[in-house]
Length: 352
Image 1 (cartoon, helix red, strand yellow):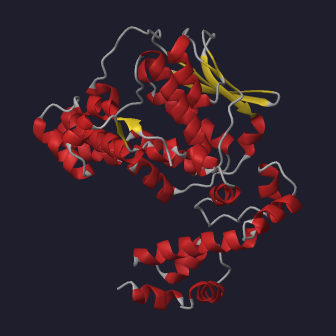
Image 2: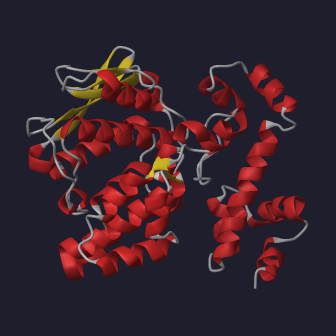
């Protein structure tokens, strides 16, 4: 379970909404009262994230009026992520990110992918000088019509954290940072708080702002798809907050590496073992101790995906079989009946 969030964070976000009516609508939508937030020191991480995304969407109406719904549906972040999940590897996905940044970065800010031997670095070059003067958060900072970040060192840290977590999410595995560089100086308790976000990998007062990691990760396959991207954005930033916890157990890490795009071949056991930095025999032995196997996990992932498709109610079973990478419909029928005792059509019938 992710750690609870200080309620004052949520209360600060609420203050950006101009009207009491907007604030009450957001609170009602999330199912929490203002008195609860004011009386409790902490709120659940999920509640905070639901409030955050509801407030951000409400702010679009405040900022853009009639264009708000279209902007929320086709925000720059959504367009970037949808493009990144269509890439084959993490390296390709980051290249797509750098292209978007050149066009959409605030005031000409850019990001670059730099490889040097075994190290890959995602570097952000900010057009404006980074100042740690006190800044109040404003609605404009959360506008979906451009790529924004909060001001000062906090803004830079959050920006690095978001894109680091996005990259981890894309490959279904936590991406260990070897070094995180931040341009501004920082020390004391504030620096310690920032360090906790990156496992003490931050170096302050550096020449630029960047995050470095093992270059081998650039070859890792993208395991997300349009559906999982929509889910991530609907609960943002919850999926990013739980990235490291989600991939803590070996079984969950394997499920995440398999991902959600079953139109691509599933990784072989040898590939999974290599990504986990263990031998194939060790992989099978660990899973056996947990009462499962790699084949069982693959079957469970496929079965869950098949159920999700059938719940949709509109996708033809022939198309579902193709999306799950079955050679023909009859093979899919046999597999699904083995899992559930029902044919796909019978299962869909039970949902009506």
